[in-house]
Length: 113
Length: 112
Image (tube, rainbow over all chains, first blue to last red; front, side, top):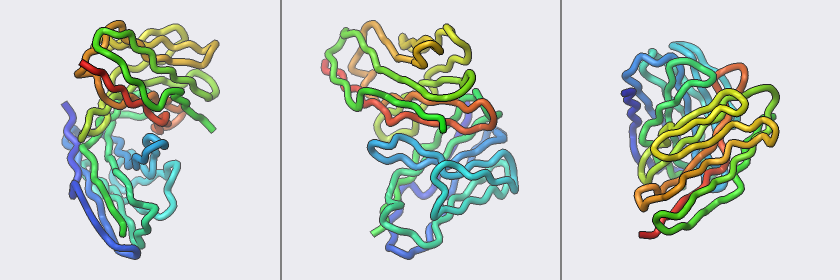
């Protein structure tokens, strides 16, 4: 079974702060994703990648950068955090693209004061 | 653009009740349709998918049938248990690329 881990699990920062969320998957999946989850909005895709060095823009990318350094590791960067980015962030991975099951990590709760 | 609508934000049932959670989508062609379940404190888990008109997906007693005519993929279970209490998400896989579009989620609470 695919394993997706995220760190940290909880993070508190201040407005204007710099935050990096980490995600690692250990099942050799090609695709990795970053979502945010907010009440009333479900899960919304921020960025995704289909391999090391690749980055694709999701549906809510503003204020976020991402980098895929290896097949296993995908990072989400908030360089000037704002209170509107307070959310629960999930990383996911899948072997292929359309129609494939995505495996989710346990989530990172980010609070921007 | 593509979208997914879940009519019920919250559903409260008693054990052994019948469950229906409505999911309607808007998309061109034949997108893949999914149901995911999220238990408290965890990430969403894949439940099942369907990719063609009239195809039925099922898992753990839950089922849904792809209906292109009504653009629906309603989740049903004949007899719910307290352990089914969770948030359920309907999702749509785009015809090209790897993106999933999720509905707003439905919180199911089952009373013992």
